Image (cartoon, rainbow, N blue to C red):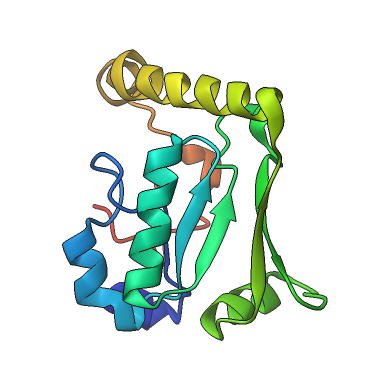
Length: 162
């Protein structure tokens, strides 16, 4: 949280309590005053997991947001957060989160949406088993780390990874 403060960043909690890749409920409780939003709809998650996220946001008084959380191109745009009014650039979007401006979490529906979510969920299993072993130990190339060569040093000033 100190690093977020240093960067004056909006703090969004993706998929709270999901596996080991986000904040747990006790961590959300401990930092609720500093959080700007909690993801309350994620295309990849199962209905009971999204319901748990909505409860977490409601019980902690945090605003919500929605996300496609797309790792596969077919899932891009399945869910999003719509703010009232026009937001001209990324700074305006960050401000909207920080100021907890009114917003609506929107997602597509129907069998196609559910199927894309399930495919994303299955892909997550692949990414976190064989693909991760390959990237971290065999090829040495983890694309989600800010130090990855593909980012050409653009995140060196904000990275907290060694």
